[in-house]
Image 1: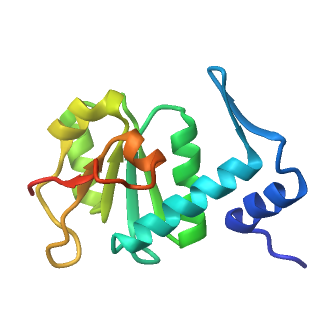
Image 2: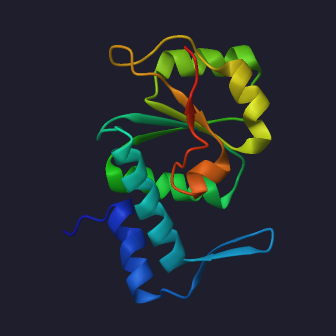
Image 3: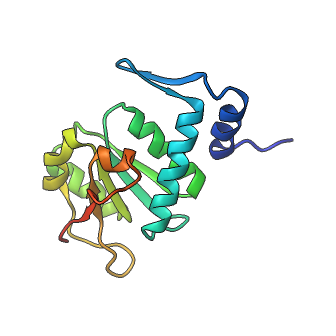
Length: 151
């Protein structure tokens, strides 16, 4: 019996059909090769920022290519993805963040206001701060637009 996991699945799809469209979102197309490359780059950037296998990565995104990229990056790096619903009220979002204690919190620009209001006050693992990032930062591999939130 062969074991198939999500990280190798996207990599194998990219090798077999690199030019095939993996995502078509509002006219934005992403091939399997691009999805594999961008999820590899995001996984590497998050590991470089100090996330470790088993860490939780919280996301506040819509149904976007950036969410799919984060999904596969988590699978490749061994992170646990915690997708949060953008329809939550700030107290509900705060509760979920406090309960889950993610190592990093990524939010698309569209939800930045909710992310700021919902930012939690407790740090995970002995004081490591959660961060809030824009989708641009996640799509550009956790660039300098990701900055620590005061916690």
